[in-house]
Image (cartoon, rainbow, N blue to C red; front, side, top):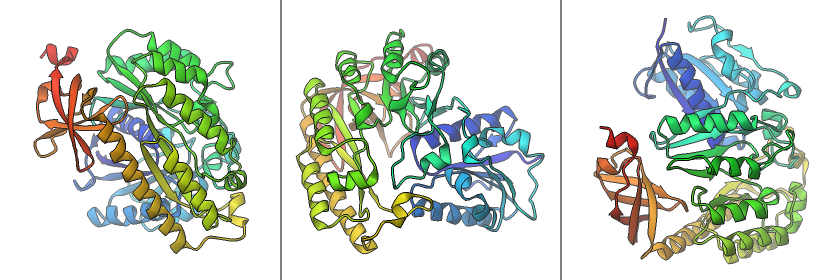
Length: 442
């Protein structure tokens, strides 16, 4: 029996959560999880299909894995596997392709981990993607922050997106199961739990509940922890959620709110569910109510029909918003989407040019936000990894802070004075140490 496995994730935080659940399955079957370069016997790739580059990277990683160990057993799962399993099965060296329903059933589907002459495909049709799957509690950077999957799938029909095809209909974890899973993570020592899903704001929509109700229940749990919402659609970020965040320190002062375009014409073509005016209202309402709120925004450049004036509208809109950073994506044609048939396609060179312009804007906005933190006291959760003699951690409002390495600060909320900004990081000086229960018991 081969017993060394390496797992690699492409794509979103939800994928990272699910990869960790896959890792737990291997550990339960007495496998050892090792790094990519330690000549594993098995490689598992959890893939993304949002862009063509993500798919290309998957193919490159398979080739790299086989250079490391030509006899390695290769498993490919995730969104790319769900949408184009035949294409993946033809990549030399791939042994098994697992769809979205099948990824958490691999030990019942795979009899042994011996190399195959032909790849085996286990993929359910999209209309059968209605199971919630694993609860997907997971380890992130260290045992300080965990991703917790509470929702999967999406009922939205954005014209550029393949995720509903890869993930199926929107569905949610039962609220009692979500609370129990959350408590389990707290018992394991995690201090920050990131609620993830394809469309987290849609949580509970088919169960006569909602995200606000879940958040109200979670913040009542006793203990020293905080909750971060991975991403939420602007039409689902309600006044109730904003007010709860403003009033409760257990909710991170940070929202990541996809925009995609700052031009109403393009938003209509994208089939988004809001206008620029709607988006602006939500952002400014949140910033007004929540002190030092961090706002992250997704935006796509080079969507079909986006002319120079449309892009300028997006740039100007983003420039005026009180945002903290951008995640900028270059539009990529995806099979089986409505947008692939649109005319007036933007040349790739122009798409990338616009991407670079918005990335520069993001760096400027991030620096401005960090500069505002100088002289403030932030509560930072420090992680364990030693970065050349320095600790790194995040504040509630997603500011990345560094401090001279001190193990006693690991997995603690430390009151930290921000003294400077250097190379995209804030310098922190500890004002008070709040030791975790684990460290007190050492």
